[in-house]
Length: 88
Image 1 (tube, rainbow, N blue to C red):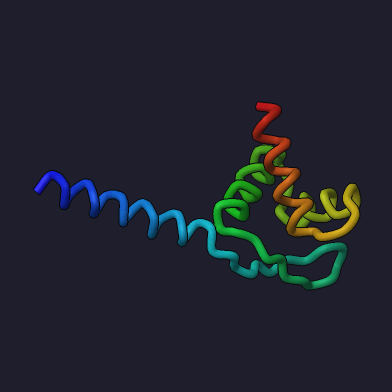
Image 2 (image 1 turned 60 degrees about the horizontal axis):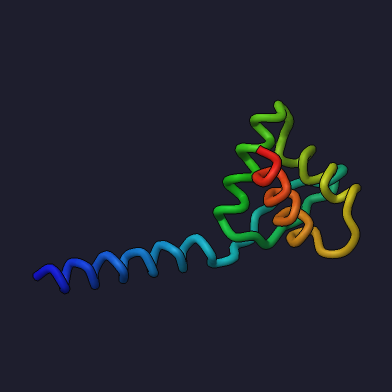
């Protein structure tokens, strides 16, 4: 049964990883315009934490990220989050 339990644990971990890495659309407002952003839920949750930590709204934080980046906003958000994690 040990092998079976170990296999089940690995399967559950794979399922959990796939759920966390599956991209979803999140709606927000940027500078008064409704938009949706495609992100993995783990990045959206981290973005919410960072906004709360900075005592701002997600929309304001995304607007700041957007104003400081060029190109794809979803990618800019991911890079921003990774830089924030590295600086902690």
